[in-house]
Length: 167
Image (tube, rainbow, N blue to C red; front, side):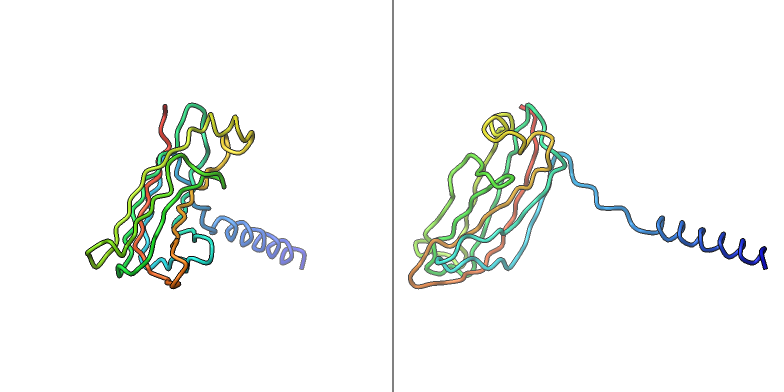
């Protein structure tokens, strides 16, 4: 009986050990770059805040580095809307304008938009200590529709590339 209990305990311990090693590892965050794309993003109706169209996470912010972001959006179909794009990193706005276009002036089936933003991590960390250097960087591309009347909810195709670049 004692031998059976010992063998049972060894089998249970081995099963527990095997089951914990069988779990897949957590995904590894990219250290220097991330690239995202999505189709069918529904923009806000102009009465609500912009939506997070895409987001990317980089492993951690580093001294003497800049976060560089490029993004494009095509609103389809080109309706009477005023789509916009802007970027924030860890909840703070990146440098660069809110990019917008008046789609009713575009003579096309799609309304294109493109922008480029950047954030100096040393300056951002000086302004907001403990938020950027050594912390995971969450980059969010906010897409909106600035038209209020009549409310429209156009859909869009969106791409974003994020790079952590040494100064």
